[in-house]
Image 1 (cartoon, rainbow, N blue to C red):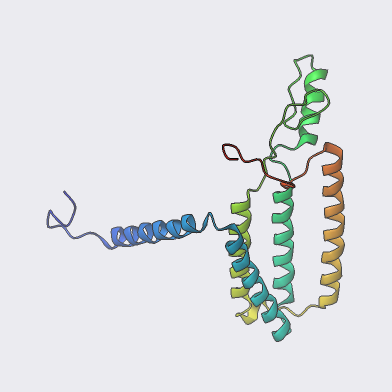
Image 2: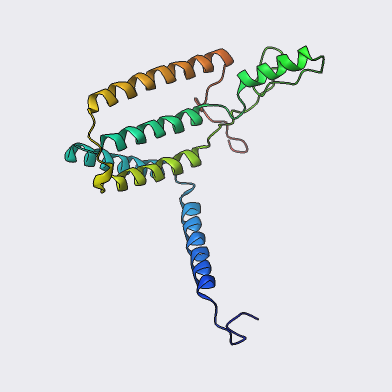
Length: 196
């Protein structure tokens, strides 16, 4: 028996809670429907990104918002490219375990000791990468409608600093990939089982 069946009206807090739950459920259903459409999701995000950059270029402002947004996207990209279980940390743990006299544990990536296939597991899955990038794009675009976020800065310094930061960070990440012999992308033909 519900509260309305017994003649007692629901409180305003219960109404707000029920409305919030309903909206959250609808939002999750929309996201669940979008999950299999990877290309269309990323094209939509690229469209939002182009609207954001067009807004920045045409208004000649909000460069600090653009810089903060670019740093956040770089952080997401790095998390997307890194393995969930960092082999350098695993190597340190393995060395510590051997020094303490314990039995050595195995690394999550294949090595010369163990050639068993282990799939690459990302620290940030593609879905979370897309969702975070899209939300950040919408927030950054929303920030460009408020004058308080239009902080006067000399934007060429921000651009140069971002590209230097990007180059150094990606160089370090590529060296890490080479050292631990992993590729974060599916390159080549996919094996299809059960079909001819």
